[in-house]
Length: 615
Image (cartoon, rainbow, N blue to C red):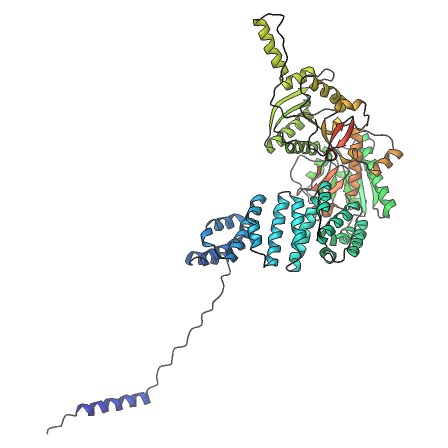
């Protein structure tokens, strides 16, 4: 039987029918669900650096800038500098990125102790780019102020911050006020006067008056608190009236934490110990008469004491919460060797070590190295580069001579001649050796031997490469050495000297032989101190070294409530009777003495002469 073949149209209908049946009976596969991928900003420094490697510019540079900023926050300046070095300035054209990179470069320079380089990055072009962004401009000005402080351009830092206004968050404004106060604490009296003369804004005038108010009462914290309140009532529209510097906000807390019982460890049976005690107790009674807020005082005699541990423990057991002393260098060394100290201790001498075993161990004294450092700095500022040295032939002075040489060479100077003298009387040979006059005389003798003629005229010539002479001598020796220098053609060579050149006698007639000598000394002997006049009326006369020890005693009492402020950096410096005082990280108090010159037999502060050097 023949079966007929279906036609094409029939087959097509069949396939369509089958497809519809399948579609009705078989479930279609589900539609794919879109996957949600979490997008987030990179959270680690390494992630930013990885993205920088895989991104195009300028995004790659932005990632590197961010990574470097984070590295600086993480106290990794060396690695941050490496990241910044990989950034090309050509790829940073966006103004926002350029500003961030400039600030970053400045931060790196500050971290490397290169303040001048930081200021180059924070230039006027950058500030002009921020004219419409006052909050960011304030941050840049803060960094400029930090750089100026590091460069010791204190008055400029004050000007910048006083003119920049109070923008940004309260924390930023507080930081600006704190930086400005640091600058004001560091400016000299002369610079403060100059700032006052050019002050043409309410803000700057207010800051200057605040500094003056605090300086006038710096020997009494309660008096400073009262002065701050008076200033706030007068300058009530000033930015610092409602937000004083942090250090001033904490004055009340500092006073509450002050020591209430002081133990004084001194060799009171010796002149040096009695001199320190005279100054200490004089300052104590002055404070008692002023406001009555004085601590209890207990004196322990260290005369003849070879071991300090037992006596020190007795002072602790007496209930003292601050110990001042001892004065003897060996006893101070013994204290520093103890593994720990139970109470804060202000030793009145220095060890030869740069470190301390206890954070309670502070050192304060009359180290002659402070005066030597100041003399060298003054001579360098005057433009001198070649020094000659005259010093006694003595072991202690040999150490001090080496200290001067190290300081002078660290500044970039050279010591071209040095002589030592061993006896008093005739200093002609000493001076001739210093000035190479003896070499000149030897040459003349050789010439005369070759040409024995009576008519040969000889004029000795001193060496010409000496810019100034650094003299270590007491007043009696100096009165002979200075004229001898003039006799041997060195009258025009400036002479700088250590404090012992000034015996404090005030005898203008005999001191005329010291005219022109520039020397460093403590303010107590160069200024009019009311307390010094009071002591002179009530205590036995003292000159020279004993007067300086009295000043040490005055300062050791006035520092008792300020040690914590100095240690925390809230008090930058303190105008003491022995100099401008500041504390190093080691707990050692450093002094900047004053500089004076003999004029008509009188001692005159160099600042009052209006010059760096007087011949």
